[in-house]
Length: 68
Image (cartoon, rainbow, N blue to C red; front, side, top):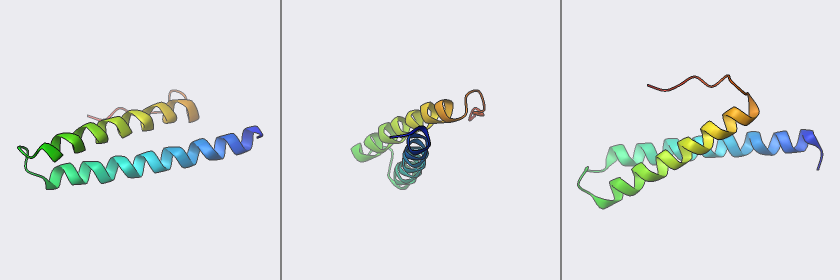
């Protein structure tokens, strides 16, 4: 595998993780806070957020803007 293919794969992985983060975040917002599934959705959205953050840093070092 050459460096261009590796870059494309990391970009696809980043896009997939970003989509999953959005999906789990939306699911969390749909659920009642007392619902155990809401906690799972929160954990999963945070996990995908971390993956997106790491891939952003690998793909574009120092260019990630922090969320508030």
